[in-house]
Image (tube, rainbow, N blue to C red; front, side, top):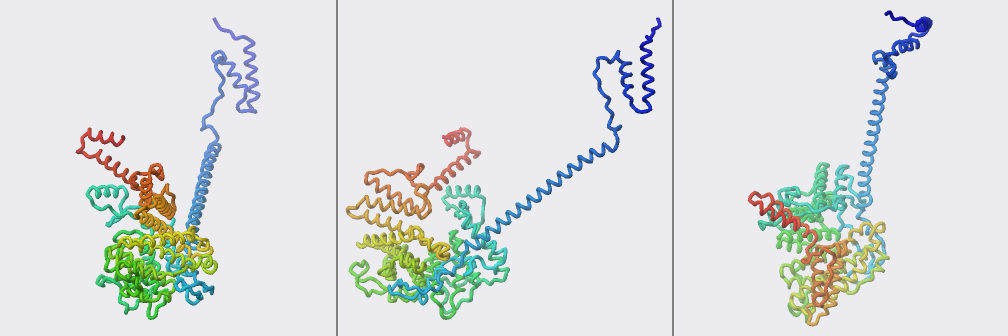
Length: 634
């Protein structure tokens, strides 16, 4: 049968065609087209959801696609430019900050930590009492205290800081040397004669040396090593800048001091300061090679600074201090005969000869005879700087004789040196108001008098002299009296009151604590040897010695573990045990054998390292290795 289309549907279709033909002139895509297609296909797609047609990208206008891509690329470029700009500015700011900190630290050290050394004797005319005669003298005429000569100058001299003659780079290196020794308080490093090695490797070498009964390598502070490298750099730069250094010593020269008839060449003060800094740091390193090098440097400086013609007291005092340095280094490296020659040579600069000790004053308590030796020489004509240098040299001489069991010579030198000190001391309060240098000079004399009396008591006890106890009591009393003045360090010795007296005052404060500690311990030991000793007083003296020794180290008894403190504490515990009392350890993990924490740490490292090596030895069996491992864990 032929299918017929309803008349109504046909009319509707024709009506839509007329509408399409009418609107085709105005719009390329009339909406009626989509309606017609949807109606014609409504029988097959009636249930499907409507999805508008998606035109491909190729059919979009070319300008729209390029504009979208260029916009994204432009955004990336802007982001990269901002990132590079901010990173660049950040690096510039960091560089400026680091450079400012670097130069600021150097400027701080230059202006505040390296003060001028020539501002002590300003020529004031205050009336002071002579240190030897007790008479009032004019300071401007005869009291050149010379404290600035005893300080280590960093080439700046009276202006302070470093010398401009060294150049910009050398001055920075010299200030870095100061920073390394004052601000770099790191652990010790290992030094071997053939060079520097890694700590782990040198630890194994140390263990092997201990097992072979060989001496372990020397340990040197890292700050001393850094300072030595910087000073070597400064010296090389100074040579390249044209500064003249003293000639090297001839290998064929005879040992001992130079010929007094030969005059030394003029030594550049900057060069002299550099060499003295180098020698002082080598002394601090304290290895055999470093001590020999320091001795040669001191000899070079001494020979180059021997004054031409008539010398001043300050020049002679400087020569005596250098002679003491060289003699002490000779004694440390085993050249005892040469050390004695240097001590004698230094004393001759003050007009003192050791063979001038006479026996003109009778004494009933002398162990060596019926007289007490004295010098045929009046020390009242010595300036304060010369007096300090002379007493310091005499102390080195008597210590040299005492350590070599030459008790008679030590006793004679001690008795002669004690005659240099005044019978009465002026109160420090009066001196402080007039001149801080004079007060420091008197405190120095009191400290050395206590030291000499302490040595005198030790020698008297060794020779069975009954006056040993009374001498020790006098030494302890004088040391405590001086300690009351120097502890804490008075403010007029510190900046801004005085810059050149700061370092000598700090050293004297440390020496006063050490002398007071040793005098208390010596007095306690001598009291303990009496027939009926007062153990309570002896224990108090030993505890006082331990307390002062801990104080001079800047730590408390709970943290100090080395030096003489062990000796003082061990005797204190022993005396307390004799009294029937027990003493609690100063800290919780204190070893009963009085080992320091550093020694205990080294013991742990050695034991762990040995066990670690045993684990990997091929000759060890598995069972033994397991047993050692279990023991180490236990």
